[in-house]
Length: 117
Image 1 (cartoon, one colour):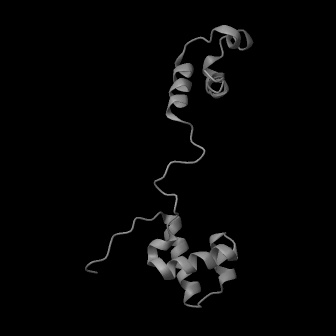
Image 2 (cartoon, rainbow, N blue to C red):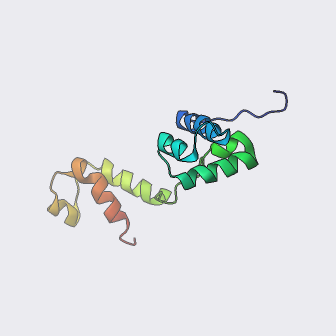
């Protein structure tokens, strides 16, 4: 135990690691492992390769801790939150959806934020 790092994993990753290790030990086939953890056999082979190279931490998703590629920039998020916080919507949007800022705020905010302003 001395000199080993602590690896944080989700329950799903722990289950996947347990099943993939069974596949590595040939207790079950790779196809059975894929069915159990609901991934493809190709993914099982890739995970086995990573576990052999990196150890148990090879099971952890590589994007963990990184921002999503689909995340909105902070300035757009701030603009959307300000828009949603307004009690009433004014201007052309207010005429389209009078008194609906709470219900339509987040939907409208995203479309309004991309107006190029």
